[in-house]
Image (tube, rainbow, N blue to C red):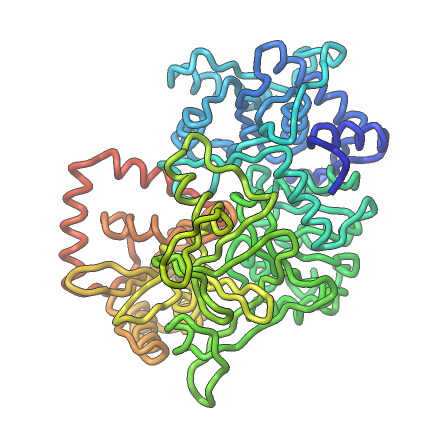
Length: 614
């Protein structure tokens, strides 16, 4: 930990100490190529004071301010200005950049009760028009790149405490009911210290990446962590990476980056899209911590990336599988420094029963990647129904305590009591009487502790239970994708629907031009393989166009949303096989949805994803 009481105090001191050194370098992507944009610590400090004075003059102190920017340095100036003003930043996705309408942002603006919106000159007219059309007449809009707005000399330091709110982190996923995680200055300082201890960063580190700035890993890991360290950050836009993954790896070598990462799909994309000729130009030897989190880490991806990029100087011990979430500010666990990713092969049948057991001869196995150890948190694995703690090697819901755990969701007292103040029962089901077992965060994630390390197995709400067996959708999705090279890796959604029994549904993206036979054969092979691999019927298979499967901004499959769209008839398939009972269920649900157009509109609003362009 530092001696600072607030993150604002820390940034002010770092700015004074670094002055003319680059705080950030941003690599834009345009028709002329990428010309690096530099922002020194002194320039960031001056710009933040100017914008902060505008916020203070308009009464934004301790109030929420929505930030809507394309990827670039203007966002960093605006976020820092909120810290300087004592305002509560609310980072959000810019609708124009995401190719969507303002519906999601309207929900966030209303929920956060924002008093102002900060953006740039290019987007200010559209945002001002939106505010007027939605009746937000009392919400001011400022184009912060206008130097005439605000006066750095008029700024004054805010009065803040560790309990003061630093920002609201709106969670990714379905957007019809946005939830903002309340992150205090104390939470932020605690988690930045936890990150530093876990990965061993220092003022000499070079951090950064391509993740969206409104995403918790992009914001806290790639922007606020170098600010915390007094180090340099190097950044690029998400779509730069998605269009050309090579650019990310080239940036790492060009700037001697040491720390940065992304979800598992990012590493998989690099393996698939970086050519041999491009590989020869890469130097990844400076990369000591390649964070891999935000979605399940795949053993096959780790192995493939290590092998593919070893000639470029990438070392296996640099791969850093980790686990975290917005509700804990960011990082919870990570593998020990200097250790390569640990892969644990377990018996598939035992896994379905909720246990980690050694493989048995020729029986089916599953490979799990360790998410490492918890240095700054207490962690328990708990039965989600009985709330009794599970022994080591048994799967349950992951519960957490620690200084980084947020106070809760903005304006959600009932939910906060259930999620952020859970209580572990005694072995007999008797509740705790002295408070020692209370105050736990229920993550909604499933996992197990084995030899002191955490293995995350899936999401509680997405678990597929068929014939009394627990199936993890990601396992079935991987099996589906292994049947044909034309099926997109990480581009499928498996879930269950219920009639008189549970039915498995597999929706999988396919590249029709890459199919060697025909779609009927592809679907039949999927059904045969799933039946053989998992001993369950796969009567419902939909092959869809690339970009159909919805994902969050961190690349997580939105299975709940896909299930909703499927039942409402909102999935257009290139080829499909459906059981009669499931067809009847879709027809009934579709009719119900037509009677409730608002539900359909909410699902449409939620249908956005960063990786849809891939």
